[in-house]
Length: 113
Image (cartoon, rainbow, N blue to C red):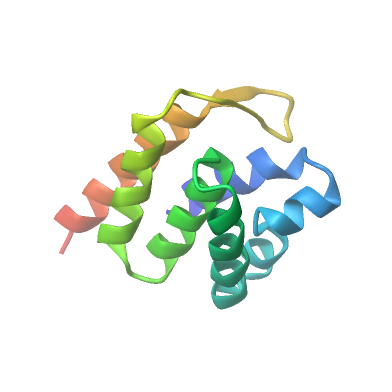
């Protein structure tokens, strides 16, 4: 899960500071999951289909042991058109790739004992 969270944070790191705050970046980076969830939930009410919002909220749900909710958000991202997300390292990754990686990690986590 840590790798997925890092990938998502890297995706939003390339955005301006104000956008990072709206995408929960600051709170996620600080490990403040409740603040990140509050920020992301408010943004989702305004922008219900923005993949960076859904992916970051899914990461929060994973970190707070809400696998079913994370799975639903990954499904929402996969049901929409893919969006290219710029990573801090200069690479571009599809929102679908991030969602698929999140689901793969979720499936691994659920199967583990």
